[in-house]
Image 1 (cartoon, rainbow, N blue to C red):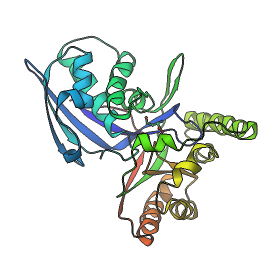
Image 2: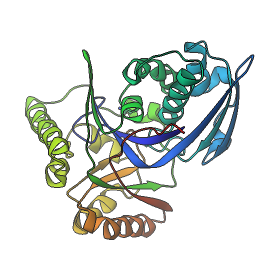
Image 3: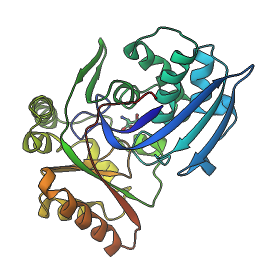
Amino acid sequence: MRAPATSANLGSGFDVFGAALERPADIVRVERAEETTIEMSGAGSEFIPEDPAKNTAGAVAEALDAPARIKIDKGVRPASGLGSSAASAAGAALALNELYDRGLSRSELVPIAAEGEALVSGEAHQDNVAPALLGGFTIVAEDGVTQVDSSVPLVVCLPDIVVSTRDARRVVPESTSVENMVDTVGRAATLTVGMHREDPAMVGRGMEDNVVTPARAKLIDGYDAVREAALDAGATGVTVSGAGPGVIAACYESDRSEIAGAMLDAFDDVDVDSRAYQTRIGDGPTVY
Ligand code: HSE
């Protein structure tokens, strides 16, 4: 099972919008067993507990009553803002659903995978697990999840610093002005239509946000310079990916390589190592 990285929020859609990325991804393998065991390898795996009671995939195995030997090769480092725990939770949910023939749809697996998220972040957010399971662009609302296929090109630049989701949630303002609310609604609507039309300019405009992103940007060394560099290189919009520290830019495919280079250079200028993924909105998990 290949379970993709995801980006939540996309600026104007805090706790609502999410997108599956074509890359990077976790690889999740499962075999039936008497009791659940977990082996981690890959990016940042040394920071992830293998105890099933403390691991997102373990929580999912418990929720599905599907004990298994689970091996996870992390392509998505934890605390990146790229849905690392969601990729493992979604991959485990889909793989165990098949292994035990539970017959649940991908939509029905969303709240189960979110249980894994709750273990890590304290809250059962669905804005990463929904796109990790369903692919494309997703809107998580009180009355359910809406999915839209899209393939807008993106660059995600991941600095070598750690921002935990818990810390990034503490800085979110508790209230905002009506002016900001009106601006956010307009941008969120623009972004949604832009995803449907696969229009990078509309998606980029819709990624701007005056409420959550400015507060979180302060946790990321060099954010303002990286954002400016990406926009100068042709990005149509730039924002914090999820809870950060990943920074995500929407763009036209022809500008992607230059934007990636500009973002890497801007982090380098403030002495922060980083890596860039030239990617796009992807189709979701692959079972093989
Ligand atoms: N929407 C969440 C946040 C992402 O930005 O805090 C983690 O699910």
